[in-house]
Image (tube, rainbow, N blue to C red; front, side, top):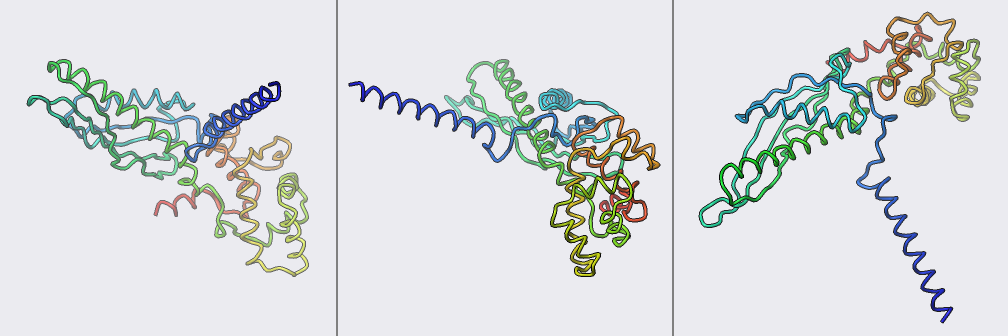
Length: 309
């Protein structure tokens, strides 16, 4: 009897362990996304610009603007009219459609909302399309008087607007970094590869010494082989660009002593004061590299202009 109880006890423990593991996996790895936190948002402040209502539903843009602001706050964004990144768009469709009839009276309805949005980097003018004309649909049942149907319609509209807000914010949170990849270096941004390699291979300044320490052992070995003419520029250039981009996407490379000998621009100084995260931290790291290596790395604004063309 004791053995049977022990077996049951062990089976129960295994069951609950598996259950906990399943819940953990669903929370942290379900739906193809990791948990989004404020620390890894692409940026922490956003402006909600013009939201145009192209439908006949009155005040729809005002209700959606409120829903957006609430949803941004839930995700950890701050809404500020002077933010660098601004959301704009238009609501293109709003329909209330009867679906099911009972005794010649509509008993089930659906609310359909469609919209187009774009995220604008106001500094560079770059615009990224978001959520293009995807329908957001909610359903409700009502066989009562017209005022009750209208009340249910209002609740369904609020629900559809909330779903739309969540999709907009989700796309911004997860997809924005790849849409703003122009912050990263490309091979064409390296103006003087020879000089950059020399500075990283035999660092004589704090920035170069730090960056060399961030390179992988294989890349440092490649720098050594290049110095001995055992590897070509064509081979080392893409590797070095990838390594520097890894640094750009990481923690802030700024340190007061490290950059004491560099004449930083006002834009860079202002970014440093903000202690930014996400895209703005990437921008800061890119600017710091440019200003540490003005003869070796091209300016970011030129790259952004090429991206817009």
